[in-house]
Length: 385
Image (tube, rainbow, N blue to C red; front, side, top):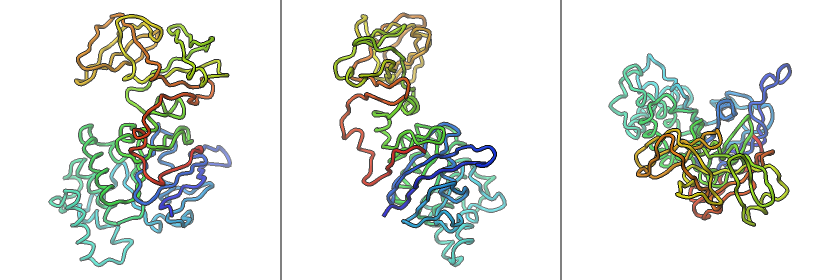
């Protein structure tokens, strides 16, 4: 039996006078212990989904099931879930100990001694045992986040919900806390739904990620599936940093043609775009190559900026008036204003229908590569969200 089942969930705000669709027809199933990341730009519906699971929003239609039971009409405290918010939501007049134990005091029949023991145990797990008598004002952002996480963990919920919990932390601490949260979730084996707009968090933390846009689900799969085999242009552009480069082109005979591109396609790629006149060629920055001579699969560009990151360099290049990004080895460099030839290996290109945005061709990858972060059963459903 699934631990969490989101079934045809739709949420419409102000449905009678000025309807706004927050989430549309979302279907996801999670087994016990799964870690799902909801990711997408602001306003895509990810926080609405989380709040509806928690009971802070009511569903317009559809069901939320926890352990097979429909919980739509249950109050948040009756759903056996715990939620961590973006702003930590700690009581300023309480110590860390009191903050962590407050939820248990309100919703459980545990004795003071049992609550104290559980708080001590979780605080030790979180590395904040020596901070239990401090108030939030005396704690750093990372310490406050650990207290907020600890407050949720002591409840031993069936489902753990996190709403952009790292967005207020600096970059280095965010990276550290990503690892801590993932390790914690694996050790506790609690079904978890995590919301973020940061695709790096989604890629590094989730067993499965659900990519949303404008209230609809775009793709649901493992991080590597969404990266290597995006279902549409939106997913291809959103997942990956720097973003995939796109070239809108017209198919003429066996070639993709635009102002910068005259790109011949082999039979396999031609079969994929059969019947499509307007095609989008996509290439990830790390798959493009700077070459010495111009050939069939190359374009000319002018270097605008080189962004050195140590192990790699990002070369931002003007190609026919639009900037594209090429990732090269850190030892490879180009000067501003330099003319370069850039090769797009045909076995690395993605092809999309320009009108619908749907992917019609993705490069072949090893099945083990895209499946290694997946889980049995897992999240499923490719309907819109």
